[in-house]
Image (tube, rainbow, N blue to C red; front, side):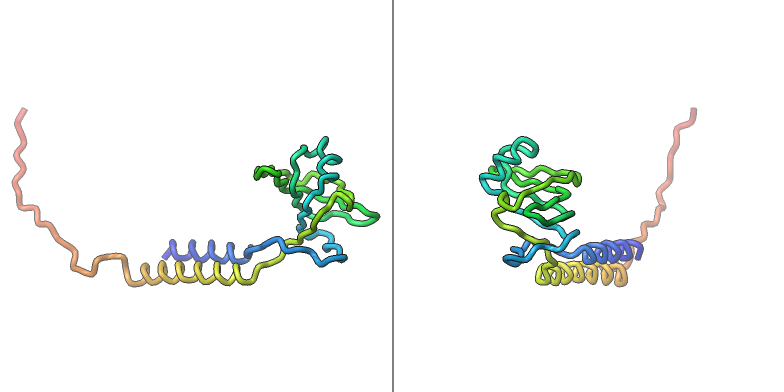
Amino acid sequence: MRTARSVIGFALGVLSAGCYTLKPADSGALPHLGSTVAFDVTDLGRVSLGGTMGPEIAQIEGRLVESGHGEHVIAVTTVRLLRGGVQVWSGEKVRVRSEYVGSAYERQLSKGRTVALGAAIGGVTAYLVARNLIGAGSGSEPVVVNDTGISIRARP
């Protein structure tokens, strides 16, 4: 039963985190401060940010700290590179001018993915709970071995 409680606790933790996806931000509307955003970097942005972030930046992802006057300040968590690499950052703040941004994305809860994950976790949890309640045996009676043999020990 302890295993079932552990699995249920894990499932609730995963579901509370949910499944998020980056969706294009509404055109003309700025993402909310504090939300997780991603910006596709233009060629001009790669040249300008190359000295501090590296020359092959494709996308910057992080928490939007400040926005206004044609710039955004992002606490960067992930940098995706042109050739498929990913760099993990730990929240360093980077100032990105609006002309360096090709497309903007905002992290939003994906209802479909969350429902699918919840159904899968629910099925596994139900299976484990049922298995613990019914038992994991084969259904046959336990085999009892009668030891009637005589032990022979050599004398010293």
